[in-house]
Amino acid sequence: MAEAANAVPDVAAPLELAEKPFGVELATLRHLAGLLPGAHPIAVNGVRFAASVRARKLVIGGNDETPVTMPRTAFQVVYPDGTVMLDAGMDQATHESFGGSEPYFPAEFAKLQRALDAARLIILTHHHADHVGGILTASNFKTLAAKTLISTETARCLVETPHRPHLKLDQAAVEHFIVHDYRKLCPVAPGMVMIKAPGHSPDSQMVYIRLQSGREILHSVDSAWNMDNVRLLKPKAAPWVKEDVPQVMGELRWLKTLSETERDLTFLVTHDDALFATLTGSGAIGSELKI
Image 1 (cartoon, rainbow, N blue to C red):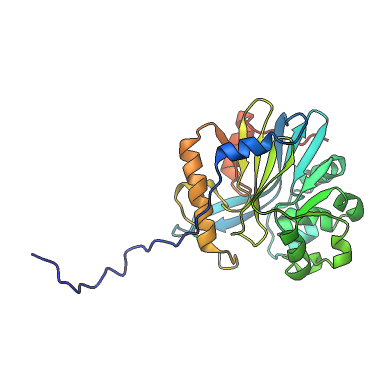
Image 2: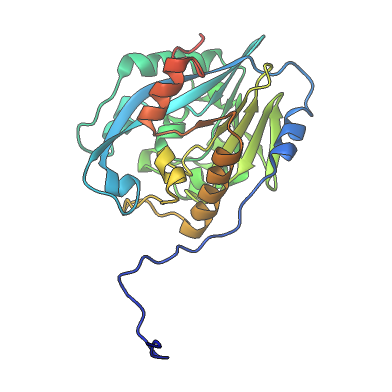
């Protein structure tokens, strides 16, 4: 029997989420990673300094109430002659300012603080508290800020839209940082390239790393909270997270394509506990920061 021309669509059918095109050729990242002179990094280490426990339906839209542990992490890129830190974590007071009694690991944050002190360069991927608090609340703020690279978008967010009220900076404080502006891609150290990805927040960035061994690492930061966001093409559904969903969907699409076509590419995701355990367990990334 022929369908009626004006048949009513099934309103229960899932709707396709809009996407903003996003993509970077891996060949371009490899080229940019080789532009700056100097030895490439030899390893990447990670630290879990705190955690949040969320229902899976908030972490990955359309799922259930199963609790998901979301670690709060920072990463250290190790060079033959020094280290670069990717993000700075947050102090316990900032962690507790979000309310509740979620896990915090003071000994691990103390290691992170020592790693920040020892680093030759610190890079902040975006302005959210768990990425910047370790510098903004530090007693040696000026010393750390003087070797910390932030984008112009992050500088603006820290002044105009801080993630927590006590993390608001004035312009004089911003002047202590190394503030840089770039269009889409920027090599920041030998073997390391920043990628603008303004979906999770207006200033969000990803990081590509190429080690001396030739192994490649892509840190998606918070474009995804869990690798299942990528695998399933499902964005976050936490009501307090105000993202540019079409932009995030484009980023997830790019990450999914890479994960399916570049089997030797190692992915880092800031808040994926199982992934962190797998990578540290296999030795793909180190579980202890070099101090």
